[in-house]
Length: 368
Image 1 (tube, rainbow, N blue to C red):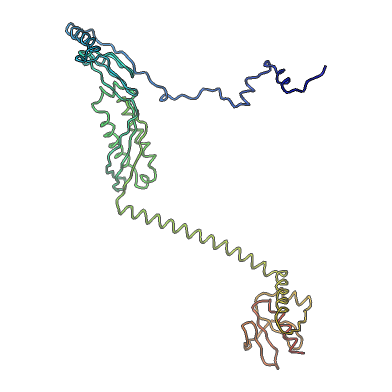
Image 2 (cartoon, rainbow, N blue to C red):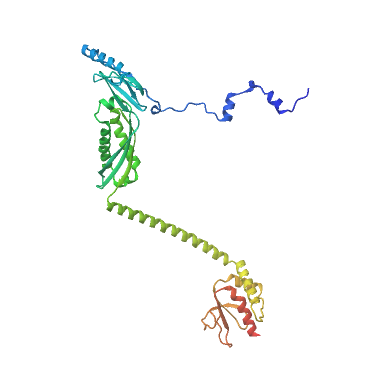
């Protein structure tokens, strides 16, 4: 039996019985775990009905009239329409004869126009800017702080019926707490730890706001103003710190530069480097115009010249060898050559071993 090499045939013979879901998930990186759901991410259903006492005769009469006129209001513009609209992001509180009877979700809701009243409450996140206020730190420095508070209503019934004005209450509570927290810290902490201070204020306010049916999302310190004298002193301190850091960087750079220069000096003072410089001097002398007679020194003399560093040497007239200069002589000519009278040794002072070969050749020529 012959096997076909046709790719379509091979694909057709693949069986689904060998399919492994676990292996497929690993290869395709499929995540089958449910994401973590936080309580604040779940949309809360505020629709609720509260128990109310049985209405009396007069209440039933008023409710009946309201129902009748409400039916007329659906067709006649002279009567009030009983269907009220609640926008998304709001919750409707329906009061019957002044008592909370139910809460309604966004949409159209029937409200008796004579006996019931609808109050809309926003459950969206509110942003309130806390007015600038002066706070005294623990080290007796006055600062002006402007902050922002983010909050939302999580219990409309408490927010409406437990406190008269929830917005003003949140602002006043934030200002009072901020003065207390700032008063317990020094100026340095207030300047450097704004987020930590904001978190402390948030934790304190959140406990009270929860009893009001409000959730504090966050508190941010928007602006911090210091007195002019304090700002000047802080600027001077920061500038002095930058200057000190710059000096440290320059000192480190000088140390590294000195190390590199020392390393370069050690390399140039080595015998191979001196020999290369000696050969360069010979090459330069050969390129110069005029006739010169150069006597090549022996290997011992070259090693001696290579081993000597910057210093003074002179040539013995009778022996033609380099010796250390032990006594002062009169200088003549350039700064690299000193020539005395013909009757005495001719000292030749050098500051660089590159001139040694030229000095030796000059001395030998004078002897001849």
